[in-house]
Image (cartoon, rainbow, N blue to C red; front, top):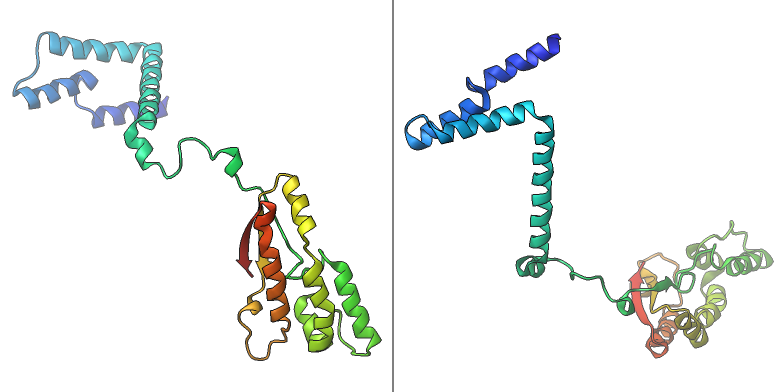
Amino acid sequence: MLAERLVDEAEEVQRPEGGAAGMLDEAGEVLLGQKPSGPVSLLGRACHGLFRTCGKCRLILGALVLLALAVGGYRVRESAWWQQRMPFPASHTPPAELVRGVSLGGWLVLESFITPGLFDRANELSRSNGLGCPLIVDQWSIHECLGANASLALLAPHWDGWVTHADLLKLRATGLNTLRIPVPYWLVDIQEGEPWVGQAQMAEALGKGLVVYRAGLIARIELG
């Protein structure tokens, strides 16, 4: 076929006359200063002829090369040199030290899908007081619509009672060892014009929640 003829011609152009055996002879000439002869030349030509005519021999050679690479890689991984340079322990973290946690969402950072009843009460306060606010869907709109006093009266009991020591003990009993506690940025930084109130009450509630270590839990604070 035309494609096969083109490939054969390209190979003949790229490799020296005589194929692999010729390449061996030229390499020997460079190293020895003369063309190899006798056993060296015969061995090269014999190997070339063997692998050119024996397809199974090429497969066997490939398998042996892969096996050598696999064994070599295993020996490297088991060596002291490799162990000292690994970015993580050779064995996985013991089960007792694995992080098994849950997020205390809806506590200090409110989310309507977690505490829908709280937002229902906020909207009811807006309607009953004739404030004419649009639908309250987040913490910003609670403060902005209800104002400082009403929003604080609504949220302070929630912050204080959303998480109790009994809750922490129940979480620990399930096998959890870590709590993620989202904390709003406005607990530490309020910009001019922002409606946030209740930083002192949130800080007090957070301080109570941080005694999670008494229940055998670890707290991870995340500023949101």
